Amino acid sequence: MFQRMQQKWGINGKQFWVIFIAFGLTGLTTAVVTRYVTDWIGLTADSFWLWKVLIRIAMLLLGYQFILLAYGALLGQWAFFWKYEKLLLQKIGIIGSKMANNSKKQTKIAIFASGAGSNAANIIRYFEHRTDVTIALIVCNKPGAGVLNIAENYGVPTLLIEKERFAKGDAYLPALKEAGIEFVVLAGFLWKVPAALIAGYPNKIINIHPALLPNYGGKGMYGAKVHEAVIAAGEKESGITIHYVNEHYDEGATIFQATCKIDSVDSPESLAAKIHDLEYAHFPKQIDALLAAQQH
Ligand code: GRF
Image (cartoon, rainbow, N blue to C red; front, side, top):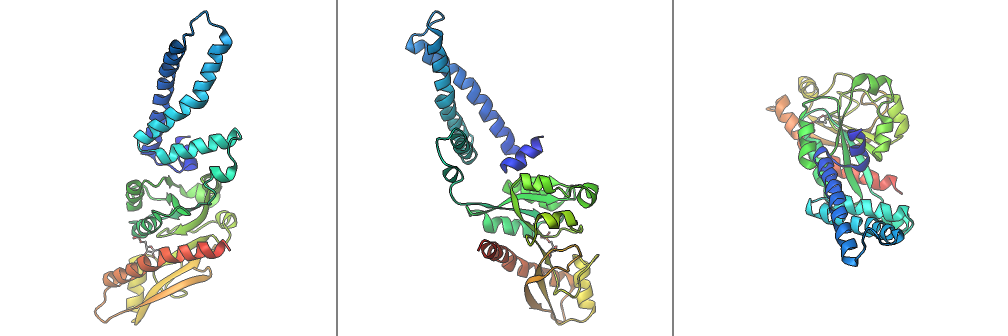
């Protein structure tokens, strides 16, 4: 339940507990302040009941919300509580939905990654200060993967997935939709993407492959294996391919490719470093351009 709430609100584990504490402190403080206010006004146990009820309602509607915002700000969670207040004001009809949602729509991206996560980190940094796009979730199938630490460091919520449910169950589609995910980026994710997920995100799932597809792709072609095969074949160049994801490994339509030269001294490791540089330089920009193009 906690995990579902974290995904829905786009918060991580630490934030969840800070927010929980802020609500608790607000409840206590409001009760104390309400008592002071009733005393100050001069209401006693014998006063007319309606006045006491009205005071409590006023404290709940106004005092509680101000105290909540104050604790939220003090505990470094102003953005969360401000969003919460705006949604509340929208629900009781005081402001319109446009205002509540900041009028600008924010596209939420989920990055699926199960490795070191250097691309995930690079993408998170690229969109870090943007208000129109956010990396809202890291989806991972490997407990202990480096990308989970990266998510923790940047405060991005994570979802650890399990094979049976992903491949043969609901593919976590309801969880992704509930978290408001609109676009999926695979960056070092090795499982085949099931039909249910592709159907749920048509033309909105992309992958990066560390070679020039259609060569050196397919099942089992990942990481060092790709670079070893490229060098063993005596290729003079390699590169990256960013492509849409379909139900077959590395076969969706190509969106973008960039190349690098392979020197006679290159090893699979040095080629991997060149490829990573290309990925860092192009992947976030391509995601950005694609999102902009899809919005028109
Ligand atoms: C990248 O080289 C990408 O092309 C491939 O997996 C690798 C992930 O590396 N799909 P990292 O985990 O982002 O460092």
